[in-house]
Image 1 (tube, rainbow, N blue to C red):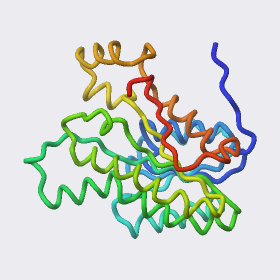
Image 2: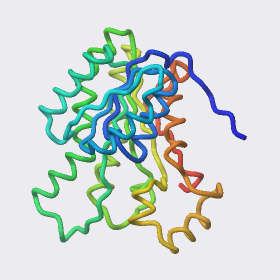
Image 3: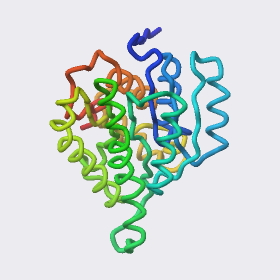
Image 4: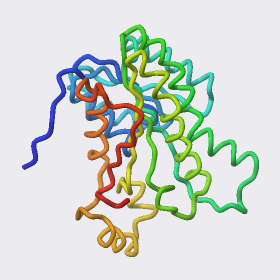
Amino acid sequence: MSAFATYPSLVDRSVLITGGATGIGAAFVEHFARQGARVAFLDIDDASAASLCVSLADARHAPHYLHCDITDLDALRGAIDEARNLTGPIAVLVNNAANDVRHMLDEIDAAGFERNIAVNLRHQIFATQAVIADMRHLGGGSIICLGSTGWMKKNSGYPLYAMAKAAVHGFVNGMARDLGKDHIRINCLVPGWVITEKQARLWLDDAGREEIARVQCMPGYLRADDLARAALFLAADDSRMCTGQDFIVDGGWV
């Protein structure tokens, strides 16, 4: 039986998670809530969010769900203000929301380009902008941006997603020095192929299973909980001198 870490510094800490109703985001919500953090999360999947909140009703602080389309920047700013009112100044931001919808270059039009970038990149920048004053007030904080190994592996089938995720890494590197002087850490948490319910339903076929078995150094499937445990470390005081880095959790694929 595995025994996993607990982080006393996360107790009562205010955490905001985007895209928290399902998949990796739901694992973030669960793990932070189980550490005793004050969690608010944004999503548009009301039914899944409600179910998640019910499952965590016995946590030290039951999480707060805020319906928000993160591609609407006014709505995003308003939801962050509401989260702040519910949990206090935001000490941890997890920029998780994304959509790896498949597409090919010849299918992309201007509206599709803008929509894809809004979902996979733009909100990370503006959510970060919106919490900096909180973190300065608190004397520091942690921003965790979700990248991907997909662009590193030169995967086909989602060029805009790959471009956006590569840009997330650039944003993290571009902000680390400016934020560091205020004791604000910013890192990129980089998943490999995490087999969530969505991935298993849409993309995991026999060829995919064979590829995982052949390429990953570690046997078995990468799960959302594996990413959540890494996020806990990056949010806790234990990682106080970690910034501007890529933390890859992929079973040794890349």
